[in-house]
Length: 284
Ligand SMILES: [Zn+2]
Image: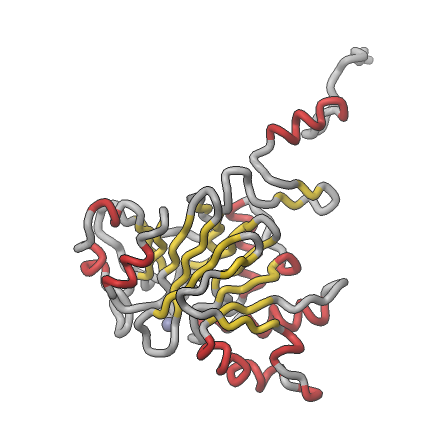
């Protein structure tokens, strides 16, 4: 039988207790909740896990959406249908666990189904399936909040329930930044077929601009260009932005653009504006 040396290291991936603090200091994270085995935002700042890249008609991808790992929780950007399967796939693809009970904030761009159809499942799950029900806050333009229950009510208004039984509605006015889970969030109205917003999301280390669904608008690009990374939608249909329109931007802007919402089967030309992939992590 092989003799085990007294100073042999245990055969598991974690360090001995004596070096635990040094190990923690070496981690690229702000906080580590050992009991949940959940890693919070990394020390370099927020990071965005791309959860869906498809458009409304995609048979290959989930609806365009992301989850931002913030200092005090997870912030979802939009919530398309099949959200639970989407978060599971993104968790496995990115290696970052996306737990619905940690999504206390949802930034909702607009009410098209490929951006909002998952809210019913999230609302039910957070109210009835968790150990400690908490209503996720929904941050959106006032005109989006005004009609949110009109969309959700037929599936959720049993026993007289209302929107505020499931969600904490937080109307967000353009030009008035708000702290969300330790991040600064600002919105701007986009040009789409229904009320829609884009978002700027920032922390001390960097920022990400999220166009939302929009036709090409230079003023929207200029506003998004405050960010170090610009996630811009790209589609050929009515009230969306064509690749050729984005290709006309200055090289310095295109170098910061990543594309999302691209229709199935569409190949974008070579260039600095690369399509995002589900499970990809963006760190501004
Ligand atoms: Zn849309």
